[in-house]
Length: 362
Image (tube, rainbow, N blue to C red; front, side):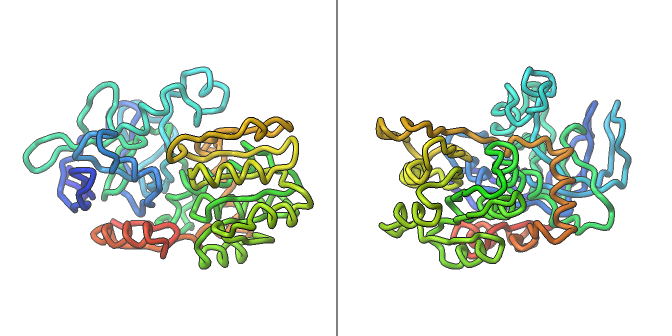
């Protein structure tokens, strides 16, 4: 079928809105008519030369309505609203241990835009293939094909176009707090970076009952939003007195820290903000080498890498929605919508920090 999609033809090129030909869903797959798709920091990897093939359709925070089923799909029906999340093999040791975010094939299935079978789901007007497996969905389009195992059914009365970020960025921040760090009531946490992942972590920390929730960011508007969403303290990441301020706020050191920036200097500050036995979670890949002094981890401090908040989307996304219905997790406050043909404007506003989570509406 003919669809409309935002196509990235080179790492340094603007997205172009094109008509493409989408194949029918194969065994175990479904086609989804996209209602909205978020831009996520990981989408920028498609702008790193040599990281992915081009042309490519990115997007991995899609939501929409099932409009076709491939052979062998059970438990889903045409017309059902769904949120799309990351891909996993569902067969490796971690997948079978309810840890699909740490699937042995995670990188190959999510960060290459291609699949092992080489199927070309998308072709352009000249009949040439367009990479279409970004996080198993490539959802910056009017329609996307994904494995039935990667979708989460949701209720019909929800604002479907806003739900896509629950499948990645929001899930990552909240899951980092609840699953990976297991933040306890009355404890302290410092969150470095107040983008969608960091702000989701702030909201999750408040839900978890943390007594001190510190948000660190260089953007004053982001700090104010973090305060409104539950941060008990906000700090300028460029303040040379930041380490002392964090120590004072936590009574001698944070029990938890979460870095969402990937900046080695911020990670180092986060580690030293911990009290002995404190744990620092890292979301994403550091921008450059991370070299910690020999004494950084000596007093029982620990570092842990985090992917997708360690979440199982089929149970985690409904939990997030339930908290949103209760008014305890207002993720919608992070979202600014743009029509898909304004993806260039959305990307610029996001990179400039004037919006937290752009969601594109086909």
